[in-house]
Length: 462
Picture 1 (cartoon, helix red, strand yellow):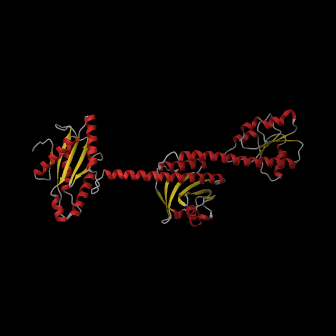
Picture 2 (cartoon, helix red, strand yellow; picture 1 turned 135 degrees about the horizontal axis):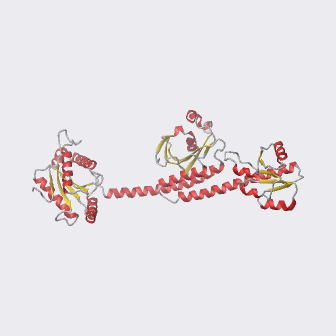
Picture 3 (tube, helix red, strand yellow; picture 1 turned 90 degrees about the horizontal axis):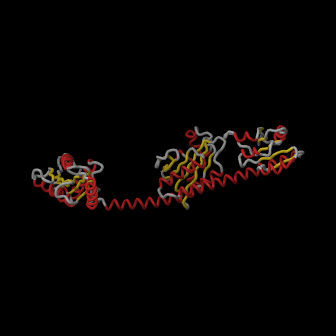
């Protein structure tokens, strides 16, 4: 408690000292300037206060105040009670009466403080739930959880850890300290507090990580964490433990409170539901993307298929028409591919097509598109590329393929390709179909010219 300055302050301080109370003496106004690290008093006793209690306005709202008056003259009692003073004692008084009334005020003050803290935490919890459930994106959900928990509990570390119990591995999916972390692997054998939660499915709160019995097996690892509090809260869905909410804070004299534990357990309950929802949404979204990919992907080579090629060719034609830009189109065919199938078998032929597609795909620019047109025939779409550039690219691909040793073929056995190139804008091109027809015409001109070569449309030498 604090005994305010006044004519009888020393007398009151001696009385409370004798009763075993911890006492500080100072003016009521000085409490407003008290350092945060100084332990807050349970009650303030003001001896012979001056004025009508205006100083009450600068004190913490939940700090109970008892005043001691020499006489209740001039309506002082009513005035002080109206200013928010909790009790007024008038001299002469019995020491036991003053002590009892002061301790009662302190007890009521602590109860009110707990209720107020619970109200604040509940308000924070509701606010957190709104933020958590406002999105189905799993990354946003997890990031919101760890940031909200750190904000409310003043934790220096707040993380969501999913667990693989069989391998004793944890995956940090989100952490307050580093938002970029989304799948950091940790060895759970170094975190016995998490293992304890996995065993019991109950919250573990540790006041001093360095000395707690739970961390005995890793004492050397946690020696530097003296006066560090840790809380691990299970994230449960029915009986399934999805993971844990892990908090750490350096709090020499203020470990995680029961209110902190209650708040985190509430958030963990909401987090479980949000994580399940986010998982379901992510799974559905992933499945939708997978189905979409399958619809535009050639199953043998993994390149785009003919349907996607037509779509992109139409889009590029419209874009180039609108912005008056160029693009080129290459069609190429494996020379004498029937001989490969007849000599080495269709499985080898399939392997050659897969490897050819991968070699071309890995060598073209990011905006370029390769697609399997059909059989052993492929197409490459080259945005922002005029005819000369398209011919150069076709020649580069021809040389690359002719020099490549395919893994499924005997050493020294080579594959060659013939290529035809068309471009837009160009005479006779009124739509995407014309580009395909022109490139196909140029491709067969290359076949007639002896294969393993490039021809363009319109023809320059055929």
